[in-house]
Image (cartoon, rainbow, N blue to C red; front, side):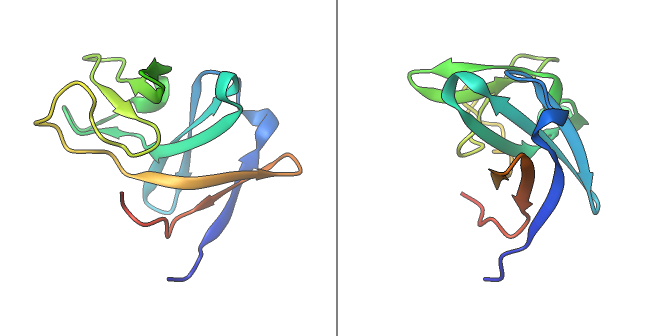
Length: 115
């Protein structure tokens, strides 16, 4: 597999403990600076419930130690680590991406294997 790390933004462009969205090629990616965990997460912004690009506007938190985001429309929660829906086994998982911060710059790997 080829690593496809792409510079997406400066870390300072994102507020802590909320999401933001970046467009890469034909994808909308939700990016979260989860300050309480000192961790960055990136997932597809598209909620599989109603096929709307809204996950970046969701509320982040944890369930049993699992970092998650709740869709702002219908409150379905998705793991920020695996993309699995934590509240409805019938919903598809969302795609997650490796993300890293180096010297204040955020990079995302579009070749991250699906989990």
